[in-house]
Amino acid sequence: MAKVISQETFDGVVQENVEEFEMSLEDALSEAISQFEAQGVNLANIVKDVSHFSATGDNKHAVIMAVEKINILIRGDDFDGVSAELRVIKEECDRDLAHRCLAAKHGAYISLIQCLKGQKQILLVTLDALASLTNGQPDVLTDEGVDLLLDLLQSSDPEIIAMVTKVIIHVCTKHETNRQTLVSKDLITLLVSALERNKTDGRNVKLICCALRTLTLDDDVRVPFGKSHDHAKLIVTEAGALKKLLNLSADYSADKAVLSELFGTISCLVVRNEFCQEIMDLGGLHFVLSTLESSMSHQGLVKQILGVLKAISGNDQVKVAIVAQNGAPLIVTATDKHIKQASVAEMSCSAVASIVLRNPAHCKVFMECQVADVIVKAMQLHADKSGVQKKACMAVRNLVARSREYSDAFLVLGVEDLIREAIRRHEDCQDEGKAALRDLDLKVNLIERWTGQGQGITY
Image 1: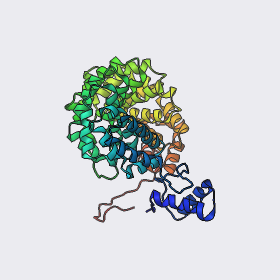
Image 2: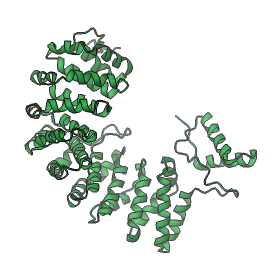
Image 3: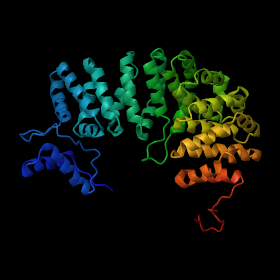
Image 4: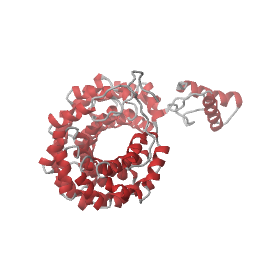
């Protein structure tokens, strides 16, 4: 493991370089960095600048002084002074994670929580500073902070809702415990209620959608199992979110930025077969395909639409409806138009793989739309993107697995070399790449990982 040091230790070495070796501040800083890195010390969370050093040796960082001043000013009800120091904390925290860590270690979170309690005059600027402080360090959240945030989320002020939602997004990202704690205290209901109250405010619609998506993440490496699926289920079943999001999508059909956020949220929520069916029953599929046709030039929106189509095609009836409603040529055309964008290419290949899975009739429709050309082009353009290669291999495999007559269409385009190169370059493409080669009737070295001899896995 990498070694770590405190900010005080680092600052002390810089000061020593100045005093003992008569270096300039810049040279002293550079030398300190070199010394610690040579010793294997991780300086990622260390503030590395010279702006806080003084000739007297009183080397206090701006964010530390701001926290100390706030604690004094709060007791004197000096709201103008507190506001100024809160802005200093925000500016310092916005610089980088190292400054945010320094602020947290010196009590900034506790001071901000005190400012939130009963200090209405400085509420917005406090929330703004708290959003900056919690960005990338969700561990600072306490039970007291949870209760304050949930109480503020019920406000009728759109500005407060926006700030609180930003904080919620930050404390839920990469932190499963915070997510579960907030959900257990009815966060989902409060978020959806806030969404309905602020449905005409595009900024808040986007922020609340982002907060809902954050609850469906499984990104905390410190826990073996998360509750992303359970949270998505609660958002749909208890809060009725799908219908509300689709209604908002119709309201914001002319605002591509908001519409992208709404579609991105919908695709994260359809985690069950019946949810996919609900989207179609509510007219969502027709709206999504119509939007794709009319918004073909909007790259971000196209990506989110492809994500929705991929998600809802997990339902076999929806899959049939996508093809029946002319979805195949729309998907191929949109992908070809934005083929240079890796994220669009990856999402498109994933959608195609899902829609044609175990359905030769769908394979025929897509092949007639020249999907092979688009998939191969995506592999050629994004050879360094493992996600694109993996999803492309899946799409190729699903297109030819039950329709071997389409193999030649891929082979003549040189897909074999592309797949073998993907297997060579990307470790996570091994299974998908070999499956594609196998179903293309090409030579592939398959390893029997278990021989049935009771000796465990063999390699």
